[in-house]
Length: 441
View 1: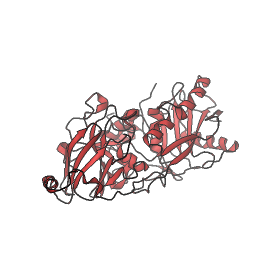
View 2: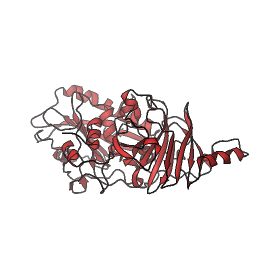
View 3: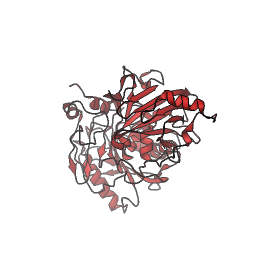
View 4: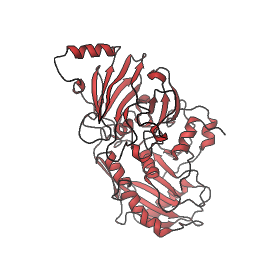
């Protein structure tokens, strides 16, 4: 069966998401977070880990290891120390715990329920002794159509383990769902005309959509998490010329421009190799944020071909040079880009880009960047309202790739909105959105 754009994204990114709430449009600013993570190894009445000692040896490194590809190191580097995963127990994980449950049929709801019951028997209280739960189980007999599943947003991830260790491409992606990030899509706006766009494909500029570990998270996702604070995300209210620092680079400076676009938002970022990120990404990128839902943003692709840096195209394959939107009377143009910073002109309220040039030429100030003039606005956060606690609720699975395909042409972003979104089934306060993934060895 031919897959829709959303079905292809689900297969390409290889993840399923468990949606527990609609993403809030404007969260508050974040404070540094230390979140107690509890990985739990579970087995079934008819299925066990083939090499349990190797699984037990690899689990602490996967979640808390010192290397850059552990979940704790990855999130700490991306957030610049604002979000830290810490072990909930001294051993750094529990198990394997044998559940009185058959592996057949991928019973993720019962796996969650019985695992939490076992933890309660051991005196561990959800929300107090542990805040995030990652359930790791052997994949051999489950037939789960995914390698990872997560509440979105929320406290739970499921890892359907093939082999003896999972990797950051799966675990990091699932934890991104916990933070409130959906599968980031792509909208094609040929020539930069924002009034004539069509959806199609994954962004490939984030681990949430085919970018894998080196891409990290995109600027809208960083805004959503509250990690671009202290002026790093600037809400643009005046026409002018703005300087951007690389999104994942060190030091201070503006890393994202956040601009009104009718009822939506337009987020502009600059990507350049920094630390463990963006070795294959370069240039100024733009995203459309629907109704202020930063976790459901889409990359704006101004080209006619679906070329991405992850497909061996140049690192700036998706970089923009100019955007226009007549309805919002908005124009954006990249003046310069490279070497760790970019200069971008923004014309609001029908102002022309040429008029901005003229105003600058008459200005006695030698600085070409009036970006300090607008007052920075606190950026949205995931610290309040993002990690919805769903302890005790059992989700209902419903959608696989065939159903997504049958739904027809959908948005390539996570379908949380009622209009144009996939139908969701709910149980308690949890809603499960299940996408098929390509299995990893």
